[in-house]
Amino acid sequence: GQNIDQPTEMTATEGAIVQINCTYQTSGFNGLFWYQQHAGEAPTFLSYNVLDGLEEKGRFSSFLSRSKGYSYLLLKELQMKDSASYLCAAMDSNYQLIWGAGTKLIIKP
Amino acid sequence: GAVVSQHPSWVICKSGTSVKIECRSLDFQATTMFWYRQFPKQSLMLMATSNEGSKATYEQGVEKDKFLINHASLTLSTLTVTSAHPEDSSFYICSARFGEVVDGYTFGSGTRLTVV
Image (tube, each protein chain N blue to C red):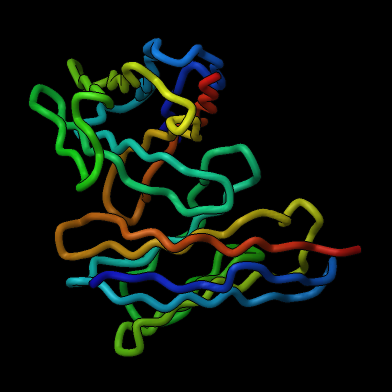
């Protein structure tokens, strides 16, 4: 079956770096997305990876290893506003998104 | 950027009544709209995929007669929850892909439905 795994919750300190991991199993693969979702709001797009390697966008970077079925989202210079849930989603061969349950990131001063 | 406008943001309705949720793509044509529901602390669950001008495709376990989806134009898709019950209380979100896959999917702001 198709499955996405990511940690339920993580805690980090303001100004630090945090890495949120995601492993996936899908029928075919057409890329992996990361979204940020604040409580009570809709998700917002952060990144898309389809090739192996690291994509950097400002304080956020996303990495993909297709052979390992693994991705991570790296957040640097953490700010209090980064407290949110981070959703990992893999796109299967039918271009359907398979969503993880999300990782709740708590930032402490 | 591409924007999907979703209304209402929140609604409280009595058990047995129907509620309509609208999603409009403001600056692009959404051939396909995805409808999700999300329970607290859970992931997005795809309910159905609506294609302009044709019948929606529902995911297994989703009652198509209860969750009516209409996608009559390239900029408007609606979800009607019919004969709502308290267990239908949830966060409903629509989403559309607005360009190439690398552009991602844009989401509506969500509708918090509470059935009392």
